[in-house]
Image (cartoon, rainbow, N blue to C red; front, side, top):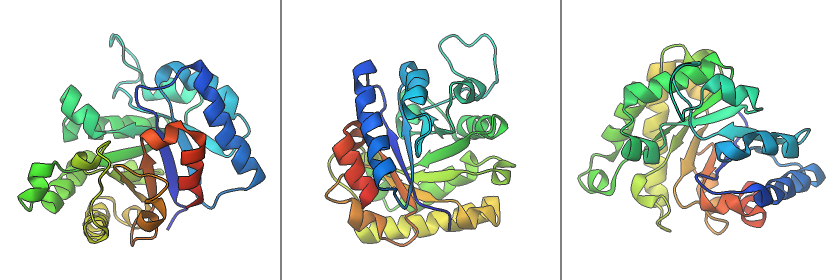
Length: 246
């Protein structure tokens, strides 16, 4: 297995003054290195400034989304090449908030993941089921189908990660049981191997969905949990560092 990855997704939060939180994380890791890889994915307005703030540190910079094309007449969009040019090394694609709020399909997510690989970025491909799908006993079927449709051919040639984020747990303060997380990650590992071959055996599968300092240790010790995609708790250095240390 590769080193665990703890990635913070700031979503549509953060102004210039909040760069101090990112610097605090970097400073702490400089004093006491972490066993995990660490990344922060800020809003696009902070990418260049955060790249400067994190320069030379152990914290990698990531984007929250990218367009499938390298350039063109796509007002308001950002290409994977632009993210890389701004200093990013990773990018989140297919987050449930993009799938639900922007109508992104598995095919669109796969195209974005392919674009990330093209630009030399490490894509973090997100999958997850709704509450209704879980209650109907369809959770594993849904997320494995998303993997099959969202992992493009050729992505296995570079580094990538998968993130399991049950939609009903994001920002809700509740998480699946340990058994449910283990079952989901085991199924996702099989799906990854099926579509990505040997690379699917080692790519980290992150858990996301209300990851907090008080539950991170329990979640991160579970089988096939290769890190975490952290939302709100990543905005505060103290909370994010507690998760990283877990």
